[in-house]
Length: 507
Image (cartoon, rainbow, N blue to C red; front, side, top):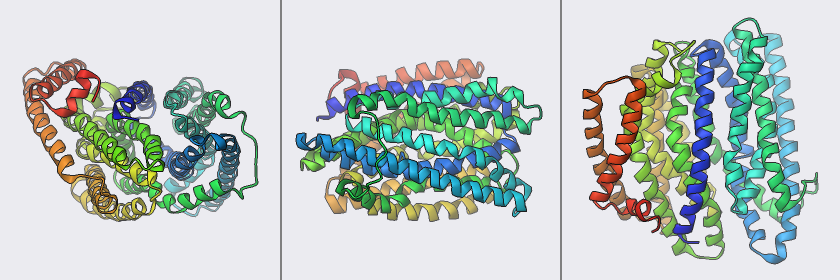
């Protein structure tokens, strides 16, 4: 498949992702009104992050990334298509068994910690909430199983829209369930109900489309199948690789929990903002490219892998560099507009915007690293991303500790940006050395020319913003429209190759 056809799928998934991010942003806006940057919400976020960590291991990260390449091998062979149905049932059963066992382990652990008061009241509170956030893992893992199947069939729209279901239940819980609880801390229980219902909804939303392709899933405990063995073989080293992001988040938030109350929430809200462009553009591009990389590697179309990978990274540079500058310029306006109401006060705005400034530095490198990581996975090489992941965990922990001494929560955010750059450089270096498909000259040239145009664009935008400060909402609207028109205009004037695809809708 040419990058022109890949681009069509990218536009579809991008549109779906934009819609999801709008719902996700509304979810955070509504939550900020109820809980702000408070201690109980800090505890909830940490309790919610732990099942999210295992979701990254067992679902959307490890098994889905191992699942898609192996399942694709069977789907592209007409004689093996029927066998693919058996494989998906075995993986379905594996997900259920693994997640239920994990839930039981954490349930017992939580009861022990709370009953015997093994830690401080603040830590005990997290374990108390963990008993109710962990069931979410079971259903969101099944939702990821659906996503893996549908992406293998090059169907991206339904999985792309499924987060809206989760966000919808989260938002509804704030209006329906939260008011039933009287005290402020007890109101978090209403949100716990919404999280569980959201996980169930994500799975059921995708299931009809999966049934159309594969039939109803069946429990199959016979795991002695070559395909499943291969997935588990790929999955084993990948556990560490895909756990890097969630582990780094847990490390970041654990350090933030040592600071003043509300710093965990500040990092959470800032992350929601900087992940808007990251999710809309970079995750969409990496998701679209993953099945195509797998097919081209199987067919030994290595030149096509190289071409699509470089096109994908160049497009991420084109979209993410100006996004990074725009977020840094409008950080205070964004946080004020979206979150400053109810329990989210001016102090909350300040601590969240400060973190967002430093987060914005690294989003372009995280976006490009996603594509490079998926390239390794397509070659069934999971060990290199694992090794780099381990380095990044150590780097992140050291930088968190050092930088938070000087910049508080901003230092933790800056550490995250440094780790993104480190990952991109190491992945690119080893990919070029091992497979000879990553051109530093081409990628550096693309990065520098886009950076030059973006800096010029940013200076103009900063000047306009400085002299026409007309309120957070109008500033953002004018800044977005003016920024978009000005950036595309400069890109076409200076004839950026990365912009030609947007102008002519082809490469």
